[in-house]
Length: 358
Image 1 (cartoon, helix red, strand yellow):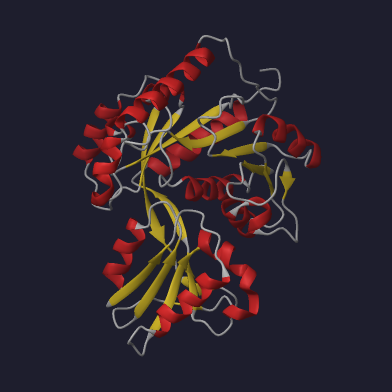
Image 2: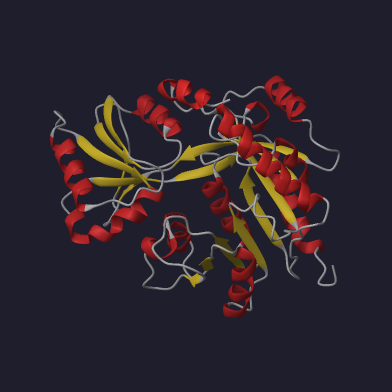
């Protein structure tokens, strides 16, 4: 079970009675769907859901980007997300003037990564998906971002992510643990991906985790890690490489910054960090705090580093960022061994075998 921080552990344990109530609500809801007393809607095109059983930090965004990158070469792809922490309501299709405030940071990142690709948001995805198909009738594949627990849509393929350091099998319901869905719902997945695995992952560890997950006969289990790319300036796009003589201020508001912190510890002489809450909407006061913290660094060779998800929430400051050495670090999903070819094959086989009469 991941208690996020040692200081929070006692508090989360005290909240155990609330987690029992939460778990009962989740179990009841799933029971109603499993028995058919509540039903979901299927669509006549390939719909692939990327999700998890816990809250945040399993790598859903890198997985959506990875899949979109692979599939867009062969199929017209659309991405549908909830649009968490946006300032709008209802269905919104991203356009040229769309901002993170309109659709949320993750969909905005998808829009910047894939110009021309249909990216839309909607709280009720079962209502938003037909509107998306109406706006973009050429769509051949829909990627549902973070929708495993939203059972009003029945996807043709479910990809379930679970983090190496916090497997769903070892977790517990919110707020004591991080689970927002029942552990037994893993049986609805077609593919299970253990994410954020270390580079030195052994075959024995893989076998032990597969045994712990206990996949059904039809379920495939894959193992993936994360790779950080070359930093680029948030406005100019100028690229730089990290080295040990450099010091940095890390600015981030993501669910789990620990892997990035570990990476910077290896690459840099030292760094300071300003850590905000997940999906934090940066204010002018925040920008001033970033400036002041950066200026306080006692180093000649220093930069500011942020993630791509944070960058889309910082673009709004425009020219105020010009004189800041603010660099964005991209993140990518990487599969180990022969996993990648098998994963792509499983996804493309689903799309190719999909029947409109299904």
